[in-house]
Length: 125
Image (cartoon, rainbow, N blue to C red; front, side, top):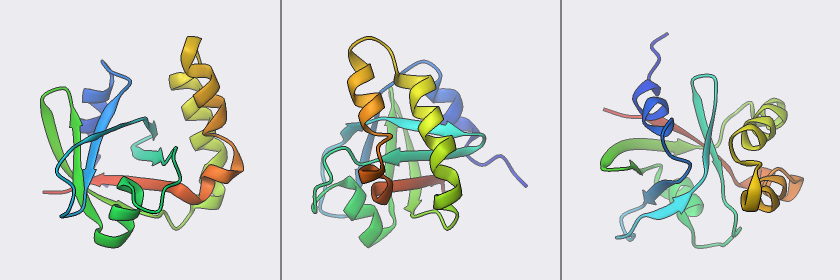
């Protein structure tokens, strides 16, 4: 199996904030936290809003991630194995973001109320 997300994961190494834009109606990028679990990329919606990057991906399935000056076209989807992935995603959030002022949010986003707003991303051509 090809390591499809490698360019994104490599770009993530030097920054903690990644920007996302999804759907045809959105014109701006929104800063989010993304974590990788192995070769897979995940993010959770913090605001739980009904009109968000998350709901745009659920509705339209495609968008972009911006890391520094690089823009990657991605598809976003709800992973079919999400129940078994939550502990690993939670751990990835804590490893990547649990320090200083970020701790409150890192420990917050691993709470069960955010599980339903977990998105997986995959690089597209």
